Amino acid sequence: MFCKSFSKLLIFCILATAALYVSCSNPNDDVVPWTEVRVRINTLDAKYIDLQNINSRVVIKNQGYGGNGIIVYRSSEAIFNAFDCTCTYEQSDTCAVIPDEGNIAGAVCPVCGSKFELVNCGMPTSGKAKHSLKSYRVSYNEPILRIFN
Ligand code: FES
Image (cartoon, rainbow, N blue to C red; front, side, top):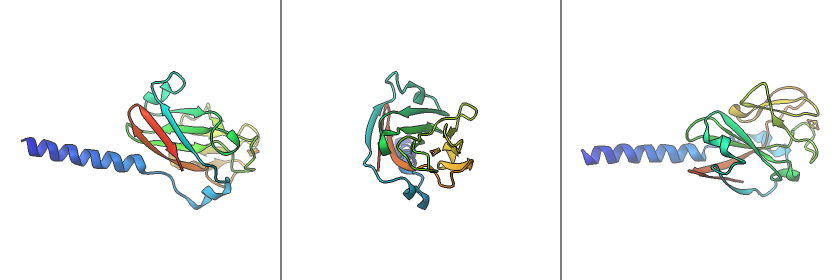
């Protein structure tokens, strides 16, 4: 009995760990210049408390390329996706996407109007941008979320 429960727990831990390190990796990420990212946030902090809920997102300010910010989307208990807010149309430090009010899993550039799907590796869905948002790796050890290159 103990062995069976332990095996199930072990398998769960392995799968959960694997899920945490799954990140969107696509060749289009290169359009946003590399910037070292090492962010650690506490999801119980009032600024990030929304991340306690599945299907939620927050913007971590002054991080990523040009300090444009990082947008984090939580799609399940264990899966978070983190993207540089830099719009991939111009890759400027003055063009940053914001949460799309019409789509909980979306982001939109307020300047060019490009829209991106956070649940689908930051892919552009409309507008001038043709490249996905730059993604970062994440690990989650409740309540601490780490975002890094
Ligand atoms: S990039 Fe400058 S507008 Fe979206």
